[in-house]
Image (cartoon, rainbow, N blue to C red; front, side, top):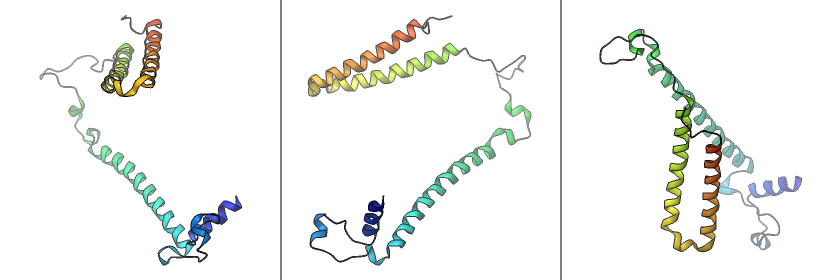
Length: 159
């Protein structure tokens, strides 16, 4: 650990670690752009603090803007009600969807993205040779294992 600290201090002072090609003929210590070594560290820390502050403030400003612009802050109750061709609603208007809809949607998105990968692979199939073919066989095999698992669990049967 002390070795790393000494090398880091020497680099910040403008020198080069011993044993490197640049250190053989040049034994002078130079300071980068006329600064002292501690000023270099302080400048780097302020960059990190600035980026952290910018990131955190962006998150809070976004949440604050959403809170200010949301319809919940308005006093009108009717703005939050669902509207269906001017007819007043009756009963519960917030119906829940079954979980099977979401599972079908997830399976569709997963296999849709995989089709894009397979299409792009097919465009460069001749350039890949045997390694590309074997890697795609493994990829499709993993996909088929996932499909077989979903089928075996009964996810694809509609209730």
